[in-house]
Image 1 (cartoon, one colour):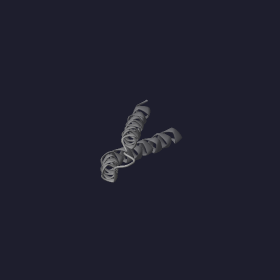
Image 2 (cartoon, rainbow, N blue to C red; image 1 turned 90 degrees about the horizontal axis):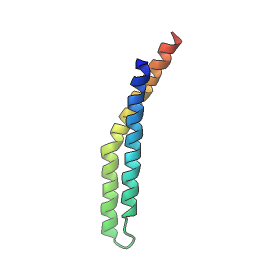
Image 3 (tube, rainbow, N blue to C red; image 1 turned 135 degrees about the horizontal axis):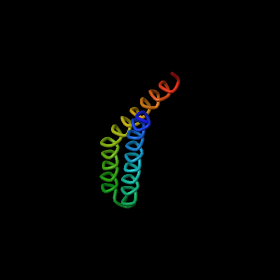
Image 4 (cartoon, helix red, strand yellow; image 1 turned 180 degrees about the vertical axis):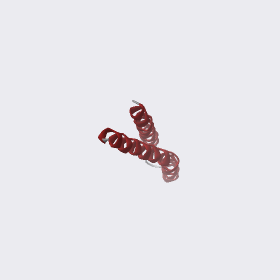
Length: 78
């Protein structure tokens, strides 16, 4: 049971971070002006900041979940 809880934490964190990234990017795309080039550049810079800030944490959670999955599979084979 402890192995399952060790897996669920990182999986939940990766899912929440992925959903947050998609939500923020979709919100920024909805605000993207068609006629204002400077405004579009600032929106795209904001999108880059969202990715630079949140993507490393999401990838770290995916790595932790993968490691926990491998540990769980190894424990079940013994």
